[in-house]
Length: 167
View (cartoon, rainbow, N blue to C red):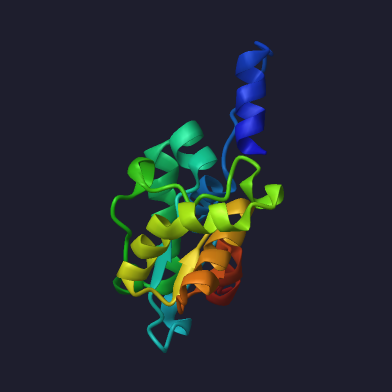
């Protein structure tokens, strides 16, 4: 939705006096301002986290600043020592293979083949949890994990924000 809004404003030259911002950047802002208080001490098992940088959000829209905000929020949620970044990352991260209609198209074998590189990248981190801010990435990362025998849990960021919230 964010990419579609940005692209529509640009393509159709729609005048506007507002900034389009990702919820991830708002989470980061609210944490920095002390409005959203998080405590990573819930992570007593030392779960390791990594992240999938969505193509539309990072490479094709808001770039590395939103990827940096994403990493900041995750570290606040799980503890900086429990975050393992992928390589390459941010604007240079690999596509998961699930976007552009691929999830809905029904060509599962093609998606799995395309997702092999993403699987290897995520698997190499040894993370227990892969945060996926995009619903297409979420489905694809979950599917390639199962298909190739991965062990991680695929989740959205807000699931973990809830665990780390304090009053």
